[in-house]
Image (cartoon, rainbow, N blue to C red; front, side, top):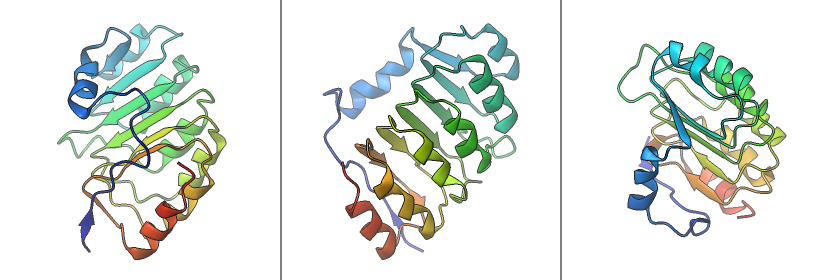
Length: 171
């Protein structure tokens, strides 16, 4: 199948360009988990966590430790042995204050269970870049009332039906 990148449903709510957004990785409010042992050092009131090269087990521990997260970024980089599975959607759904979910290079995701994100009424930004979603997964997107930014860069599974669902998104 073709690889299609769909970038923005609406302009960035923070008014930044992508370069500025990339520099936010250095933000002191962004707590980095690059090792399973890093989870215990997270402040319980953390609002933003980036998890690098970790699987579902670490994501579950992050969600349990930081239940008030507003931003969760997961980037598997080139580590294919430690990847979240579709359970990540159920894990994210436990974070009732979540506004931004980024799943990048999570190649084991096919979108099964994505409907769990409907439990997140505040979710504004969803990044599913470099994933392999099934086309049926996209039918959930129009039912996400707060979704404003959708990034499917380099993701597989984006076909004509998927684009029709995306076009119906409220953002």
